Length: 166
Image (cartoon, rainbow, N blue to C red):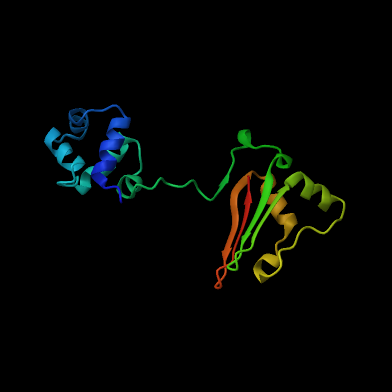
C-alpha cells in the first residue's frame, strides 16, 4: 500500500512534536486545513510546499514522493575531512544478467603499493570502456579527496558494473 502525502505530513509533523494547530500557525493556514491534508481530503496548495517542507525538515521531493534524497554519488571531501588515501577501499561490484555476482574490495594502499612496485593494476575485461581505466589518474583523483560512486555502467544485456571508493 502506498503512503499518501497526507500520511507523510502527519508522520513528519508528529516526529517534530508539532500539533496540527502549531503546524497551521507556522504556515498561516487553519488547523482544519492541516486536518484535511492529513486525512487525504485535500492537498496543500502548491505554493505552501517549500515552506511546509522546511517546517517538516525534508525536501519538497521527499515530502511529495516519500523517498529520501540520496547523497551525491560522488563528492569531494573538504581538506580537513580527508583521510589518508590508504585508509580508503576501492570496491568493484559486478552483477551480471546471468546471475554472477563479483565483489572486489581493494584497499587503496595495496593498489598504490602494487603500482609503485611496477605491478600491473587490475583490468576489468568484458567492457571496452572499463578496460581502459587509467589507474594512475584514478589514484591522483582520489588523493584530492574524491569519494563515492566513480563509475556505473549498465550494458544493454543487463550487466551492471560499479566502481566505488569508500
